[in-house]
Structures are given as C-alpha cells and as structure tokens.
Image (tube, rainbow, N blue to C red):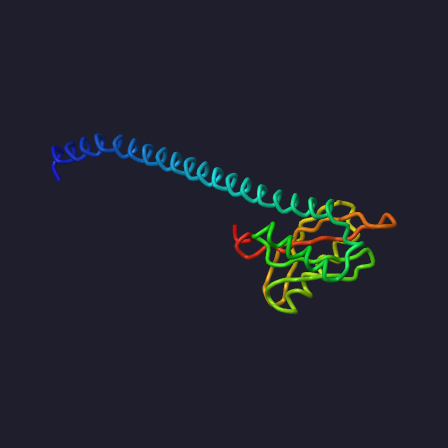
Length: 177
C-alpha cells in the first residue's frame, strides 16, 4: 500500500470517528429520554389506578359504615341479617359476598357467590379480623378454590360494648384493577 493510500485512509478514518462518537452520544441521549418518558407514563398510570382503587375502597367503607350506623345487627333476626347483606350487595355492586360475624366469632349471616367452600373461607378470613384494633380492615386471604381474595371488614358496635363484624368480599373485577 502506498503512502498516498495510507494518508487517504487515515483522513477518512479521522473524519468518520467524530461522527461515530457524536452518533453514539445522540443515541444514548435519545434512549435516556425514552426511559424517562416511559417511567413518567408508568408513574402516571400507577397513580391513576391507585386513586381509582382508593375511591372504590372508600365507597365500600362508607357503605359498610352507613349500614353499621343505620342497623344494629345484634338486634336483628337471621332473615333480617340476610336482608341486610342483600342491601349491602346492592349498594356495593363490586362485591360478590357479604358476612356478619358476632362478637363471639359466630357467623350470623353469610351470602355469596362461589359455593359453600368459598363462603366458608370468606367467613374464616372475617373472623381473623376480630382482634384488630382498627374499626376497619382490608383483608387479603387465600381461598383454596378461588385464589387470593380481598375483603373489606368494618367493626359495628353492639350491645355490651362488643363489636360485630360486617364484611364485603370484593368481586374479581374489582380485584383485577
């Protein structure tokens, strides 16, 4: 190879090297900008989803509170308690089950979709909330037949200073959000 060709190759390489360096820098900055944009979009979606879930849980809690303040479950009979749960299911369409557990842990009424095993698993989960100091609880429990479920539980004052538990299980559509 002649000196003239070597110099020509050197000049071509010397002129292309800065272009390659600038090109990689531009690609790197573009990739960083895309990462920031994608992270911001995911953050906005997560916040929007959290706000929607919080609003729905607030509605459920308000319905449980309103029923607990309006009706004293310890003064109702078995049919009236079941009727109370029907009212609850109509006030909160996103639920698929309801239960009332007395201060001793006995299920006084329970209605729900999914069969007897699903209802029993739900009632057992509600019973587990009996000793919590909070007046309201959001439970996540494992139902062997249906997988993980969510339930909202509210303590309702009863005679003798004890509390009964009024609970609603969130349906699959509410849980998927």
